Length: 354
Length: 267
Image (cartoon, rainbow over all chains, first blue to last red; front, side, top):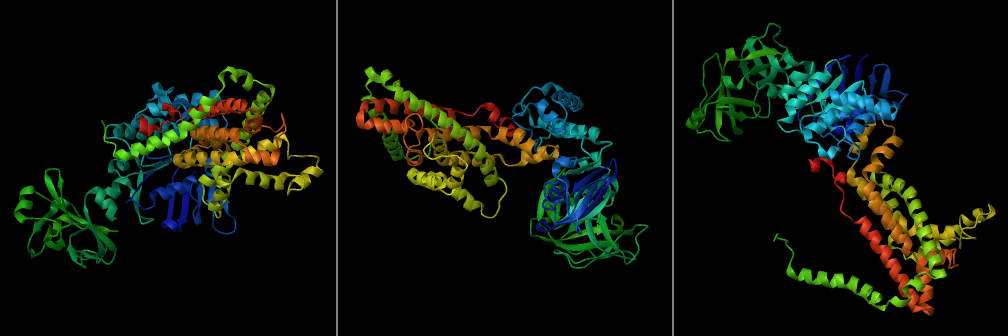
């Protein structure tokens, strides 16, 4: 019993292949427009891909390759979708919203309401059973939406940023609830939040421009990110290139030419392999002139942004960031456009295979 | 006082516009022979015409709902080739002179008409029957329902339907339990407008159905007939139609109930 999807949507430049185990929750991370929601729509059957196939257990969700073109409509798939907004049916009571799935599956009115009561109790909103959705707060409504999705007893739960429309007080409550109900279930959850991925997911995949660029166990991905997006979430600087004897030769980027980065090689990193160099913004110092002498790295950059970051100033230069004290920033007279050098000791740089 | 942003002269023209509609109604009411009002509107021919009007309008409204919901769904949901053309044709009766609609119907369902010949062979005769009245009214009233429902469907979007589908609801279940209930206010106001248009239908009815008392002579036809012989009766019956119209418009433009407001807005 596993889920596998292989899909190409040319109009949205999506081309992914993904598998989920029996009771696995996978978080999908990635910048806006990476194709995350498109992937969920394809899995749910709301969008027909140009090519590919998908199976959920014994059931073929679609198979558009070769001669046989199989397409299972959304209502026969067992893939419940939970979106950013609760989208509770406004004309039905909370109880009947949650009873909607079982009722559609052919249960009697009484049976489906019994199931609905069970799930309302499970997500702790039993007292709202008789209300109309318009009388609920955003957090309450989203919990009812979770109950409604679970009551349909889906084989695969699809969650599209379920926390993003909630205020900061309601989100932690729902996150704890999801942690409880997702354990032992198969689910795909799109999120922008490291905390969601760490708390809810066994595994993460990172999507950029319609492709999966990185995947792995959640902790491992944040400990040693290999994609720019995961590095940003993990709060580290990342430079990609080719592993050398004592560091990394970077690829040319929009901001920087190919550079040699001196760093500490991971045990498994072999020279000649594609790899990445990672270092935290706190390890970066800023100088107006090039600082020479190994074992220091000095990158000539142009500052793009300055923003407060805790009690430090985060200085951004393209994909790189440095955290310095406000007094140091004032002393250097930093402002967007300033040309400076980001300097980082070789011992602070980790180099590992990508 | 809140800032309105409306120049003062606009209010002046708005008053003129309001008077333009109200004044003729007032003039008509002033002409009503109140002493004879009840006998006039309860005469045999009046009651027959009113009854026929209400029955045929109810039937044509039902027909508008049955045909209009599918049309509005097809026009509102998924774009397809020729959709704009289909919409233009569906809305044509709004701008077509009703008498032209009546002639078109006659050449479709009349004895020598496109479908009429086959129907005649099957022993069904439509022209100049009560059925013809209903068809004429449906022809002119259908666009009102389609326009109003299509707008409601577009505003509602199809995200709720998508959720319903992933919860396991078949398309027909979604239509019955989600789509139609969610656009019910739009459907209701569309049905009310269709009913009102059917009630007032004159030109297409006269052309296609004629004016047989008790069979095809609806209230507007009765009023037109009475106008030549008994002006008092015509005015009295007109007032009845105005009253029905006021009730209908009042029903369709009442403020939305709280339950109709989406969750996000009410939260």
